[in-house]
Length: 322
Image (cartoon, rainbow, N blue to C red; front, side, top):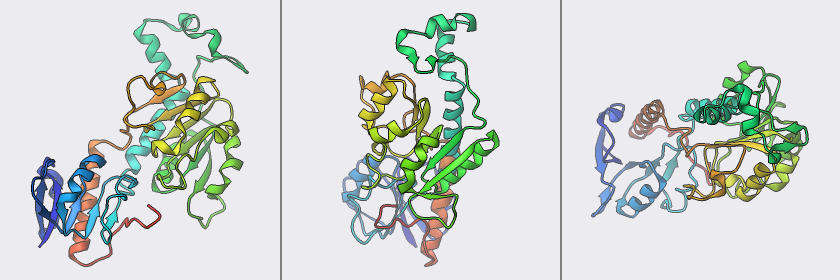
């Protein structure tokens, strides 16, 4: 038997994929005594896992269903194998990216705002245009734009990046691709070529993990290289993008942005990102769907089965943090 620790509140149906050899140990959020495990499925929420960690003993494998592990590595005991959730977020995150790109290009947030004040098309210009909306190519446009023919730069061409390309391809866009590790393909460039490719992109999708190398990776210099009106999409981690520089670029109408992650996070009341123009914001939910949770625990079941059968685990996190 193998002792598999899971969050106490986890519904039974998510555990059906565990092998018969698994002894399920339900872990309460507030632990009062030590718990011995072999395999720990980390709970939803990095703060919860960190609080539980001092009471969890003996485990050799920690499995998270998140793609990023930056909040886990600092407290994980040495010698424990950490496996991440690469691959299980591909569908939900890539669909979110397509959704916010289309919503921005078709100006759906603007039209939703006009709907709430009951303004029809003929009155929309008067309702929206102000002197502050003036940009170099004329007044801030109210009409939607075509995505067809645009260039999309995917910064982080892993499994999620590939899924994003697959879902955007039918819209007739062109792709530029950057990867942290060199690929055996001239179509995938090294991450060091970012500055060369930024001026060519209409949409920049950031989907890299948060590491020492990627913290603050997109800042004032990078924003200056982007086209006026370019759309920055961040579905990675908030600190990958320098918040102050982003607020400045959005306020000056140089860029548009769609964020599922922020720095700081959660975003406190009164922060400029709540009210800055040209921003579509969601509260770190891109990967969170009921279908994602089912995929995640099907993967957990396979991982436990591999451990039981002494087979190599998948998605082992390296010292580089991914």
